[in-house]
Image 1 (cartoon, rainbow, N blue to C red):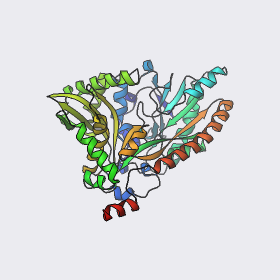
Image 2 (cartoon, rainbow, N blue to C red):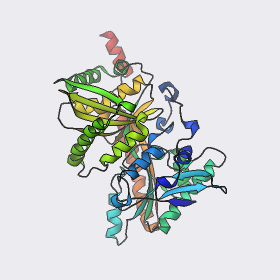
Image 3 (cartoon, rainbow, N blue to C red):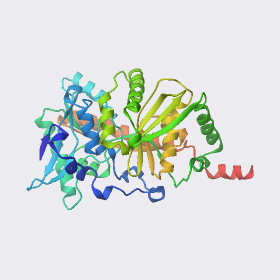
Image 4 (cartoon, rainbow, N blue to C red):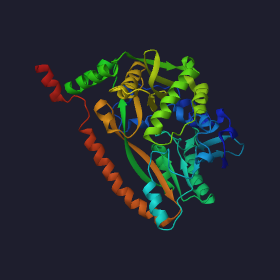
Amino acid sequence: MRVIRSLREVSAADWNACANPPYLQGQNETAAGIRGSENRAQQERYNPFLSHAFLSALEDSGSAIAKTGWGAAHLLVEDENGLLLGCAPAYIKTHSMGEYVFDYAWADAYERAGGRYYPKLLSAVPFTPAQGRRLLAAPGARAASTRKALAAGLKALAEKSGCSSVHVNFGLDEDNTALAGAGFLHRTNKQFHFYNKSYSTFDDFLNALSSRKRKTIRRERRDALRNDVIIEWISGASITEKHWDAFFNFYMDTGSRKWGRPYLTRDYYSLVGERMADRILLVMAKRQGRYIAGAINFIGDDALYGRNWGCMEDHPFLHFEVCYYQAIQFAIEHRLARVEAGAQGEHKLLRGYEPVTTHSAHYFTDPGLGRAVEGFLQEERRAIAEAIQTYGEYVPFRKDRDREAEQEY
């Protein structure tokens, strides 16, 4: 096992063979294939955020580097001949921003008790609250032992680097099993995802909703496009630097007002567009010949991942149209199984997005801090489970009595 301080120290082919091995790629599941699964997000195929292209663009653009509090410390596990068996994206963090799994209260409590919470070690995709594998073991007989080695390696790296803790955010079941075996604590949270239940058109999706919700969405879509607003889908070679200029202006304006400090640089968008344009969908709103709003999405084999949005003009419901309804429409037309629209957002529930449990794992070098957090997590997991159950009662889809009432009408 060794640590590298930049993705430049490992070839894209070797990294991608672990992050997105061939057996994961090109296997686009239809909604029928995943329907009924207890945790449908676990049915991952190609994940664009784990690719060497995406992660290296964050580093090379200056977005996720030591100067911004993201010191790369990626783990590699190799065999006796130097063949890469597995890897894990990892960063030594000097703050907790850009993670979407919030531990500010833990840091505050530990430092008030005389401890030093930062630096800490994080295994995640920077600025990206999307589920995916984190202990990236290449397929084969050694996969399970490689994940086990990566889990142990994260702990060893934290202790050697003077980190208070290790955090593995938005991992999948295979990661969480290996991490639990290494003594990590389990944390849950919630998001809202759209699931394509074999819809052929957006109207098919609307017909699955209750009458009132169906009318609401149609009205919102109609109102969003008033004032001569038109929507464009732009992907692949059609994306130009002019599109990135416009989108970056949206991102900076909205990010500065909402979060106070936008994370991504202008160079990042050019680099990620150059390296993986075919995996990007820009949804851009135009009025009177100029772009006024937009959202960037990344395309997996079975999912569309919504990331950043911004606007220069305020129009009622335009955010919902650009970020949520257009994403649903794209997923249906391209037979993608789901849309992950980012963190938080109970307002997504009434627009066809369903509650989903997300997972993270945490290890603390101070046993006292670990015991305190473990007690908190037990209560938090119960609260999250109750919230998701409650949200499930408010999904907008028709129930049997709704269908009967409409038939009678």
